[in-house]
Length: 575
Image (cartoon, rainbow, N blue to C red; front, top):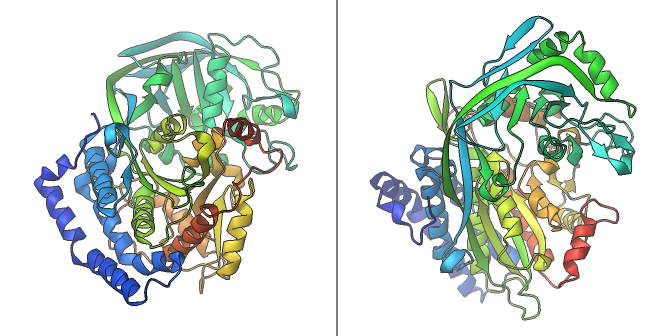
């Protein structure tokens, strides 16, 4: 569906009522009072104080209520739900006075994608050792394709176990050892090769090599016909249900990437199913995992063949990124921007759970959009705007492979060298005040110094990522901006909750991952009380951080030796 130049979807009666109900007095009163106070005090307050005076938990929640409402149908890309969500966001940006930075004078940037839904008649089977394993999609395997068409077949294709599927010359590691795997179905372990040494694949932290996206990319580069990632709960950091739910609907590809893709099948299998097909080759999965952990590992040709017939429902459509600019005030610096990113999409309507099939995505990521919208409103209204400009982006298809941000990163409305930094907001804290914050990427660039200075001012501390083994740095939109050289920070909540037990953060995180993450239950409901005191702390951190980055300070730099430093230095040559 094409982007549109106005909020035409508000002709829909249901959404009009929601919009009017949630947009009435409270937000406008708070803004009016803030502006009145500014006039009475001759606007002597600092910009940070002005921002914090106009944003409240209620103004944040107004956006969350609308964006996670059932009438937005789960905000899946290319659906009426996305039209409604992006129309609402654009309407707000226009109301707040942001400049449209999309196409043809609008707030919208078109992102063309190809969607394919695996039909129930699709089959997959592994044969070997006189046995057959027929796998049911979403229960034992998830199927998708890099070359979507109405039907994709693989028949009796040999399978090769390639360990972690990593080729890393700087680590003296090559899981392929020159093996010709063209036309095969490759089987990988998720994550990096294990190490306790932080200099070897990040130690316990996951690197880019541990990401499933890398594994599919290397499989294509090696000429494979298909690739299977083995899912293990402990290494992935989430249960199989998350994998299945995430792939139960449409699988998306950027149209530009699909045109050059040759990988016919992209799959995940459960640990139990993987154990069975290894057994069909006379192998134990534990022995294979142990062998793959050594640098002398060599590919193992399994005594099994893989067959699948994937039947797909296809559509090509235009998703929407929404872009708005708060113009900076300094003639020398206003061409630079601080790029904010929040994804507006979720999973739409999918597999019913407890009678509910709408995946509302209240926390993930109506909250992030809400905070970005409130920051846009507040910064546009301050008397003394930052010297650098602020570019607010609300991107599509994050849940389907970070596609909207991938497109934006290579189609920015400003030169990439002029993007000072990226602040990614993918959810906010709903559990209460903390003594700390966690921002992904703070240890990779000089932005970490800015963040530490801000938290020191607030009497807080920065806590490192508590689960580096899960590779969170590579799992949200900021990663695509890092790939083109832009130093990012991705906002997270802390772990030291005020007045709560030491294990409180783990308790609520585990409960969310088990019962709400990528499920219809991620919605506003009476059994999930929200406390936005922590969100307001995060808002203050981001506000103060923005003022530092958008001030006269030098452009942030990657730490020496970081994997993204070289691409940044190359981009800056054209500045």
